[in-house]
Length: 88
Image: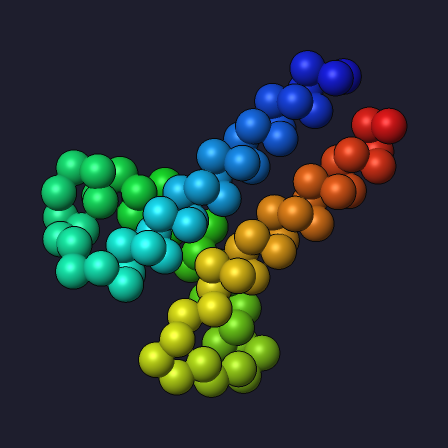
């Protein structure tokens, strides 16, 4: 069980790191069509897209700011806490 717990924590850490890199890329004039940018986009979009849809359905108009990375990291932390409580 501890191996599963550590593996999930590593996976969540990697996903959160990719989300952070995508946030940094959005502030910098970096072409997202290069290999690394496309990889980051492809890894984070399946997580960020449902969060964007959730914010839209709730009716939160964030204007020019995208708060879906914040919501995604929050959900990842909640899921990690729930899994920790289940395992231990």
